[in-house]
Length: 168
Image 1 (cartoon, rainbow, N blue to C red):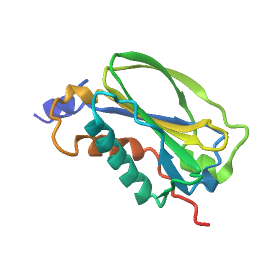
Image 2 (image 1 turned 60 degrees about the horizontal axis):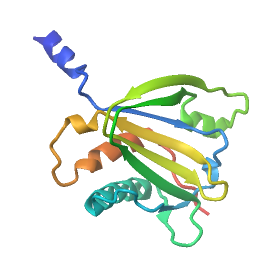
Image 3 (image 1 turned 180 degrees about the horizontal axis):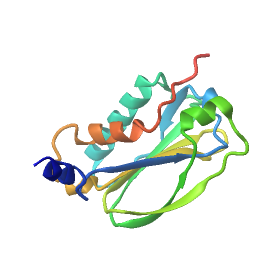
Image 4 (image 1 turned 180 degrees about the vertical axis):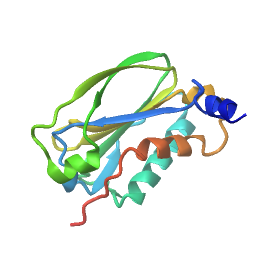
């Protein structure tokens, strides 16, 4: 019975969550954010659900929304078909931020992500470079789109981003 439970927990329908980040990010300097324009023309409700969930996660980390000169811009997208995506294996982000090791390397990993992958990108507002990207795949296999559906998915993605805003 125990092995059946373990095997069920390893099912291919489980949410796959991963992230990577840029060594060009100035993670110690970010304190504010705002969103880029929502691109889901077919559903403003979808935009507000995802944005609310992201806003909650960012504010829980001490970041504040700013309409004037935010440090970070946030972009997100749901891919409507399967995709091949290049990710990277890297040092734990929290450890890297402490050391800022210029000799750290990326190890390329190619992923096959399922239809419905949610990708959230944090973009340095000054350089316009993506400095962190988190993504969740296999989320569309659960067709239980009730209120706050994306809240748990966004939280799972942001569990990969343990950094707090800087206080200035």
